[in-house]
Image 1 (tube, rainbow, N blue to C red):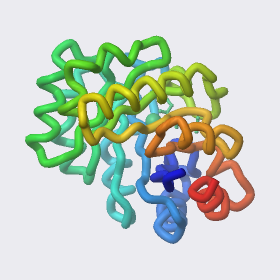
Image 2: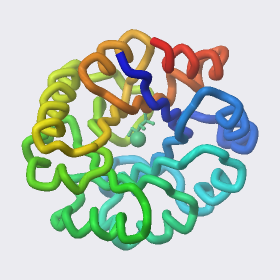
Image 3: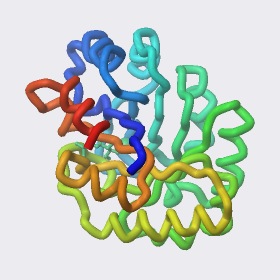
Length: 217
Ligand code: DX5
Ligand code: ZN
C-alpha cells in the first residue's frame, strides 16, 4: 500500500490561534495544508477569504491546497495564487466552462484540481481527466466540517483510478470529508493518493500524532 499525502483542513483549527496551528502543521508529518473557501452561495456556509489565507501563507512551510467552494471561481483564482496557493481546486458543479477554468489555473503556474460532489458521476470527468492534476472526491456534501463519511466513496475511488490508468494520466485522487483512522486504509487500498482531514486531526487530543497515524495506517 502506498503512503498517502496528508492534507489537514485548517477549517477545523482554532482561528484565534491560527499562527500556532499552522506552526503545529509545519512541525508535523502533514504534507499539504488544505484551505476550504466557502462563499455562502455555492455552499450554504461562509468560511473565510483572502486576508485569512494570506495570514496562513505568512507562516506556512507546506504547500497550500486551496479548495474553492465558490461560484465563478475564474474571478478569484489569480488572487488565490497570489495569496500562496500551490493547488487550486474548483467544483465541477460550479464550472460550465470547466476546461477553460483548468487551463486558467495551469497558466498561472498552479496545479489544477477539480472537485465533485457526492451525487456527481465520475464519468463526467472522462473528457478532461488528461488535463486535471487532482480530482477531489467529496465524501460528504461540501459546506461543513465534521460530517459523516459517505460509504459509496470507495466505489468512486476504484472507478476513478481505472479511468486515470486507462487514460495514462497522472492525476492524483484526493478524498475530502469525514476521513478518519477507520476509513483511511480502505481508501488508500482503493487508490486514494491524498487524504484531507479536518475534525479528526484538530479535535483530537494530539493532532501531530493523529497526522502521523493517518500517514502510517
Ligand atoms: C467540507 C470541506 C472539508 C472539511 C473536511 O466542505 O471541503 O475539507 O474541512 O472536514 P472533516 O474532515 O471534518 O470532514
Ligand atoms: Zn475541502
